[in-house]
Amino acid sequence: MATIIKDKTNVTLTENGLFPSSEVMLDLKNLKKVYPTPKGDYVVLEDLNLQIKKEEFVTIIGHSGCGKTTMLSMIAGLNPISGGNISVLGKHIKGPGPDRGVIFQAPSLMPWMTALQNVLLGVNQVFPDATKKQRNDIAKYYLQKVGLEDSFNKRASDLSQGMQQRVGIARAFAIKPKVLLLDEPFGMLDSLTRGELQDILIEIWNKEKITAVMITHDVDEAIFLADRVVMMTSGPKAKIGDVLDIDFERPRTRKSVLEHDDYYKYRKHLIDFLEH
Image (cartoon, rainbow, N blue to C red; front, side, top):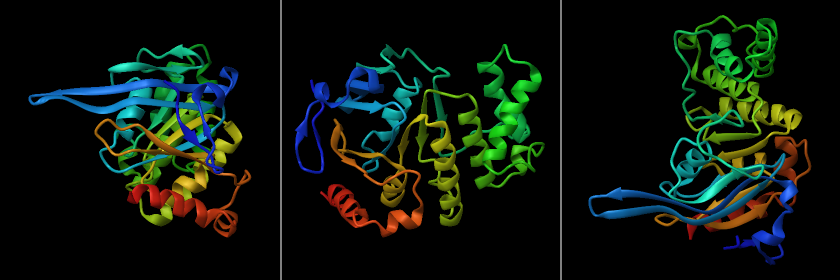
C-alpha cells in the first residue's frame, strides 16, 4: 500500500512517486506491531508507511501512546517487527547494527566509566582494525564537539544530566552510523540546557549529514530541527497521519526560524493536528 502524504499545496502524493529509490535511506513498508494480551492482540501500529531520504532530518510527533517509541525501537532492531518490513539502503534489518546509532532519553552510560571510555565502547566495536590512537582520536573528537574537552577522564556518575546526554550524543555520532535515531533525547532537561544541546546536535549534524529520525513532544523543537515533521495518528493502530515540509534554509539559527514568515503557520498546522 502506498503512503499518503499531503504537501503544503494539499496535493496527495503516493509512496511510489515520492522519492526515487536511490535517494531513500530508510524505508518502512506496511509496518505493524502487535502485543498479545490476555484480552487479545493489541495493535500498536498498523499499515505504517514512511520513506526518509539520505541526509534528511525528520522529527516525529504524536500523542503519548501512539507508538512513536515503539516504531523507533523497531527501526533500531531492538523490538521485533510483527508485520511489514524496515530497510536501510534497501537491505531489510534483522536486529541491531552499527548502521543505526541511538540516543535515548536517558543517556544509558556505564556510570563507573569515564566519558572517554563510554564513547570508546562503541568505537572499539565498530572500528576494530583501527589503532588504539585512532580510536581514541575519534572518541576525543566527538567529545570535543559536544563541549566536553575538559571532561574526558571524568566518570559518568560525576557528570550532570546535561553533560551525560552530551556523552550520549558524542557516542552515537562517533560510530558514524548511516541513520541516527533520537528518542526524546532532551525531554528530561531544563529549557536552557535543552536549547544548548539542540544547537550542538544540529551543528554536528550539519557537518556529518547523517540521516536523522527524532521523536519529540515539543512542537518548536520539531520545527527548528527538521526538514520534515511526521505526525502520527493516535493509537491503537497508529499510522502516519500527515507530513509537513519545513522550508527553512540551512544552516539555520533559532532567531531566523522565529522571525520567518512561515514559522507560526507551521506551528499552527502541528498544533491543530495534535488537537484533533
